[in-house]
Length: 47
Image (cartoon, rainbow, N blue to C red; front, side):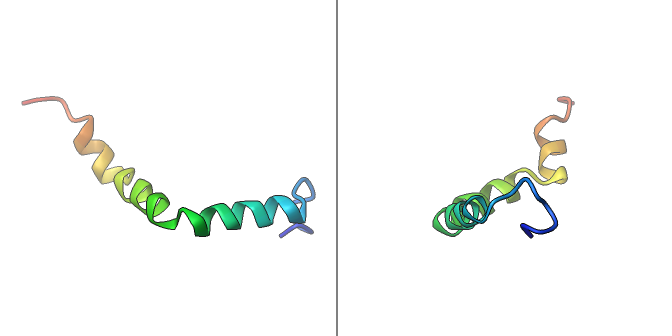
């Protein structure tokens, strides 16, 4: 990954992975809450 994206350093990749694994449940909840279908329901005009 670091070779393909030269602006990344190994420490940045490690930090991102560590954050993901430490907060996986919250991140997965945010992803689920922000699906296109859920966002359409949230911003649907009232009938």
